[in-house]
Structure formats: C-alpha cells, structure tokens
Length: 196
Image: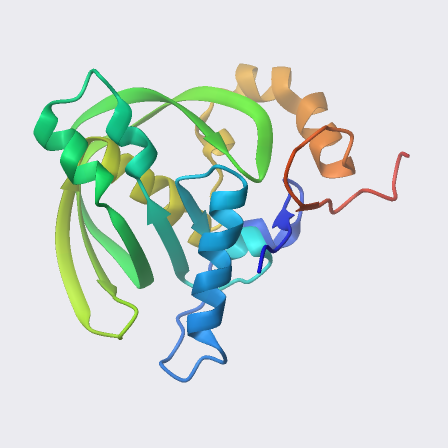
C-alpha cells in the first residue's frame, strides 16, 4: 500500500526515532508498504519518520544508481543489488574523505543541493529477521545510508547547508510545508490549512 510521505515542517521529521522490537505490530507489512511508497515516488531510500513514524527503521534500494556511467562495472553491479532493510541501526564509524553530491529528499520535493558526507561508514543494524549485522559501505551506498540514517536522528539534508543557503530556501521550504507545491506522489503537508 502506498502511504503519504510526510512533508518538511512536520514535527515527526525532527524526532529521534525509538528502537523497535521483533513484536512491532505488522512490521513486515510496514516494510512492504515503505518499499511501495518509495518506488511510487522514485526514491532510493525511505525512513519511517517520512511516513509519520518516529522509529529507527529505513529501507533502501540503490539500483537506480547502477545506470551511472561514471561508476565502475563492479560498483554498478553492487548498487544494482543493494536493497536492504535497516532496523535499529547505529553508524559506529565515519571515515574517508568528505565529498559533495547533489542530494534531494522525498519529504522536501523540488529542492536539491550539494551535500558533503564522509566516503565510508561502518554500521550495525538488525535485518528484517532481526539478525545482527555489521557492515561497511563506501561511495554512493554510504551516502544513501547516511541520508536515511539522518532521518531517524531527526536531521534533514537541508540542516547541512550554510546559513545563507538556508535563508535563500526559507520561503520555498515554507511553501512545501503548506502544500503549495506540485508533486506526483501522495504527501501529507503539516501546514496545508494555514496560509491557503
């Protein structure tokens, strides 16, 4: 089932997510719905706060990056098969050089900005069967995971911009929270009734 994506300005996007247990109600259905919602919006990742749940859960499918001609064949193959569920994740290490990449967010449509992130991460998490996993990622995979991980920490990619850039985007962000934007997927706007 495709769920509405929570827009910028909703307080749930600022909450630090809570860990969940194996008996979380209808978890498999929730995960399936999150994938459906993400694919419907042409995203590569979706975190639970983006559908209104302040829990530590996100899904990714990096396969759209597999078509990037700047990547090696090995990188394309890896990203093409990178579809995962992260439950109660914790990034335990950031390493490597910081590099910029143009990021966007399903909760903040029509805004894309260059964001600097570390090249490599080490992450501990539980998979969908609640097995503990520790893995290292680099490049685009690490970036996608860091972006979604920020969501469960109550951080948005726009928080990483300079104060000047934030001021320049202020009215655009206000319009997003009021629903004064055209999107081709379902969204829930926190301030839709105000200012309309």
